[in-house]
Amino acid sequence: MELTIKQLLTLVCNWLDSTALSQFIQRETWVVPSVQTVHLLAIAALMGSMLVVNLRVIGFYERNQPLINITSRFIPVIWAALPILLITGSILIIGEPARSLKNNIFQLKILLILVAIGLTYAFNKPLKDNPEHWEDREGLGRIFGVISCLVWIAIIFAGRWIAYV
Image: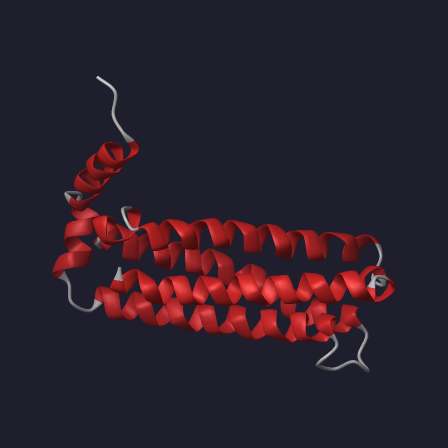
């Protein structure tokens, strides 16, 4: 007997929903609002930092500052916020697995997050070897910055749409 992806997701959701942790999250009314608050604060930190870096790369902000000064201050915030988002997002999924895991918009959000992490890594990696990397490739940097902004904004929209699909 072969399981379809949908059937497998249903089995995983049913199993996860029956775990003690999921039951605890569902039963205790303070857990979800508390976790959502931390999740939103981490989103704010990540998005604010991402915008500062990308707007500098695009040329709309702090053009008189070397890019390495901006990235050395804000890229660590992005990398610090990501594990917090992973943990809080996982707790929210465990509390209502079917709401997320079987939702096409949630699946799109996860894909976009992987793209955004890849973009952030690809942006940051050359700076370690050459702090002037993106200064020397201004046009490419601007394209990179615009794409990064659009992907992160799409993640935010997808996160909000999960509740309505």
